[in-house]
Length: 287
Image (cartoon, rainbow, N blue to C red; front, side):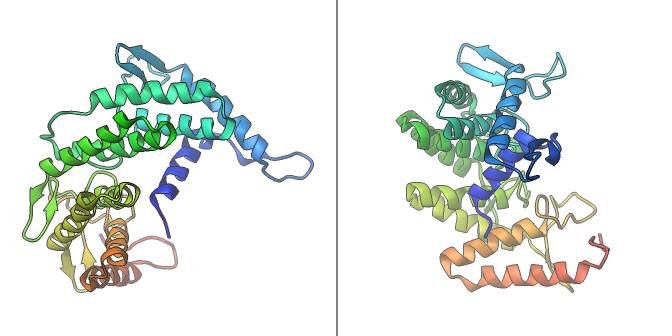
């Protein structure tokens, strides 16, 4: 089962090694990857990331595009500081060198200062592009430091997400965006995670409302359930990041937590759809 921890691990690996060939991290005698080589590469990666940081009165941030002199900081998990903070947390966990924890703290201080007081744009809520991603990162820092301010920041973010939600027939949504990166499915997974970590009844209730909202927005086709990235899109994107696959995963997790069969039924209908669309070449034929 894929979990939030799994997403974090994938993200950190992308940051640390996405541009490095596998052969560079293998032992030349045994031709096997070693823990020491991976760590060495991560430390080298940190030296590159450090070149793009800049200080502010409220903490540290990093240029989104280090090779561009005009690039500004970005506070999203997908493009900016939250992902870098997670990288520094894991590098500290691996090395126990306090300088890496200090960088993560400095980045988190800036991050909690930049969380908005209100949200008017639904694109500012999502797990990878908005407040849900901020809060996930801040909570990871809370787990390392036990700084109560970070926990309170996460709780404030949950309130902010709740306040910015729009009502559907049976649930809630943000701008009709259904998918994992920007939309309801990703926000719902964040709520599952925080519900478990903080034993938060509010987060659990919100996750169920999100699942209800996704059922409200589902498009029932002859092959099964689908969702568009948002209703204005001409084509479907049925992949995990932006479409039916990711939505169905979230609904299946909600079924495991609630036992409500309607969420399982929706997931199975989507699985049937994906099975109908796939072929031996490994792509979907229908848009």
